[in-house]
Figure 1 (spheres, rainbow, N blue to C red):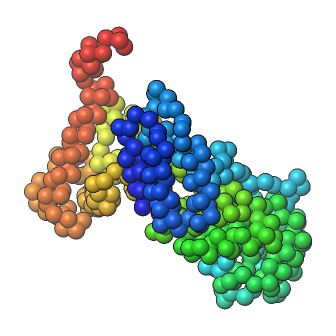
Figure 2: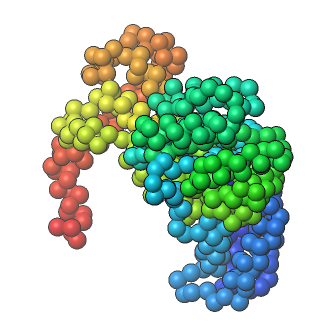
Length: 446
């Protein structure tokens, strides 16, 4: 979502390269571009003004360290101020009540993604050892309660479904069930409106008084522009928001308004929705987000994704197969499946330092290549996957037809696989001579 903002900010930093020191003229020119980049990204004008003034104060007249060039100094300042803008260095976590159940109220305008976010948060809580109970108090939007029930059934989440259509009574019923059945968290999907009104706010104030929530999370939709800022301010003023959830960060919106919600309310961003699936909700880390926006990558985030996606035992078995030169096309396909669990290739690339916004990287082509390779392997028989040497001309035509590809594509995949297996065999211990030659070239490791 932040691709345009990221490109502009990195371009500004590059323009400072080669300068001997940070003069006021350099800073003024850079900050004019920073201001335009943030405004074009839909960041609130008050937030932009404060941000630019803070950067200017730190940058003007600053002596550049010997180890830093001006572009690196500005990058560090911009990075520090953006992290502060988004909640500070320390990630903000959920607070829970001393005595269960803890109540979390989900607030936001209609269409902001509250219901889906509530289900995502319930899934995240389960992964972290909690036992949440979901309930909807939205009796106004048609099928709102049914939507939450469907999400719960599809994802193994417990949803409270009492009779009646009075929001306060629905909440009291959910609290009673939670206490009776041992649920330690109650997630309340509250009603939204197309605009802020007194009736909505009075209802939220009543729900807050009944539940005494440990968290009131405001769902800020990245697609709603400056309405995200205005609604966040009003919700915070009336009910006391404790945190922000950024929804739809995987979309194409400019996103600055959603980020502004944290600054204008003074509330930290606690979670970010990074995809449509219920398991695609991440605790928000300002350091990592800013690193991705500025092209500095998010290696820790990528490692966490890999740890969640890859099966350790399976990985160890794969290493053993490589060592014994038993790696097959079946294994190759499984490795591609594991990689795809990390998420869209574009998202993964954005987490790599220095390459997140490289021009000329055709991410879509990479996605197509992986899908094509998987289809080709799926069109093979088990025997062909185990022993590609048996795949002759007629088999290649059959595989190409079955996978919707060309014979040339099949040939290219088989050639790439043969080269990869040969290299793996050498690195895996199959060629002791190769390893000895490598060691001879690295005397410091002998």
